[in-house]
Length: 452
Ligand code: GLU
Ligand code: MG
Picture 1 (cartoon, helix red, strand yellow):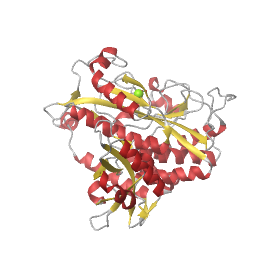
Picture 2 (spheres, rainbow, N blue to C red):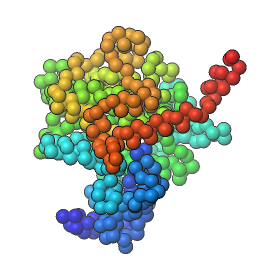
Picture 3 (cartoon, helix red, strand yellow):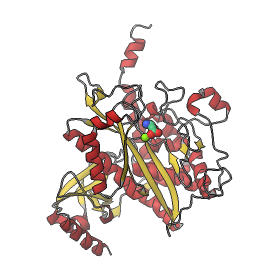
Picture 4 (cartoon, rainbow, N blue to C red):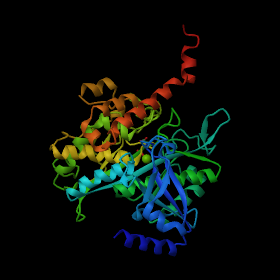
């Protein structure tokens, strides 16, 4: 079976004129790592994998004393690189001494998807990846790459879109060449911010595509002398980078399971979809550690009236209809958008958490109650609290504390040699928070220098 896949892939690659492969995997942060392997070594690559010193790559559960991580390509993930003819990316699964390496995010998602496959179900996801195009300023700051992009309300601005036409259409052309069906490209709500959409697919494919998309946009921007950033909040006064994920469960015969035209709540959702929603809301405090995994994430998820009209980012654990102030939005019948995921999320880990939380809601037959119809951005935190609505954690450290208490999410992230991946994740993120906290910011100097 594997040999058939390999032979087919070799033929496909030959037809595409592929001379080199990137054997790619990501670490906990979602950073793409790769080795460049010439086509002449294709057979060895497919059978034995490409070797990496895991400790050098990032948080992969390895020390310098550990044996090689072998990145074994998934033939189904073959992606010719449109801007480097002759190169193709293969997303890989990490093995150590012949065994799957439980610290590998892609394998963590695959394990969760296998749980779903046992129930005869498929998890489909579409990701809305937002990003800024910026330039670095001399003083270590950044500014939008387009100096004319200064409008107070730049969203959908046709002129701004035109000024970035070359970059945006290049990305669009490449997405379509890959067969990902790019269907829209827009100027988002912040100066310098864009979104380019590709069609949904099964969760693993979408997670692989997010990694490739970010890699491609970074590379193209760099080649144009710019920087792309997916960080959640590059500018304090502007809306941040979301990576909203549209989710739905299907049976393995291709029938949608979230759709029900007789829904008495009027959203076109099935009982199963409501249970899934309820699971995500119940696990929202711990889940946010996976969907918003950086210090910077919590500058996007702000409680209280936002400084710039609307952050568009959810601060409260609620769901609603076509209402962008909710954590979970139901834009149309049959699917649920998770708006809590941001541009720094590792898509494998975020989707693992969303699925595990949703499945817990299904297993326990939870009900989320009626949809919230408020404009939550217009309410004070006190008014929201008076309605009994929960707030998602407001710092990375609070989020990982919640994850530490969430046994469903801990179990979903799985066991690793000597413990649980969740504990490794939490420890890594606490260290990241401490590192951030040790820096003295310009805000502190301004606030405290001569106050006392
Ligand atoms: N940029 C917003 C966010 O951080 C999302 C805007 C939109 O709804 O597209 O989530
Ligand atoms: Mg958007």
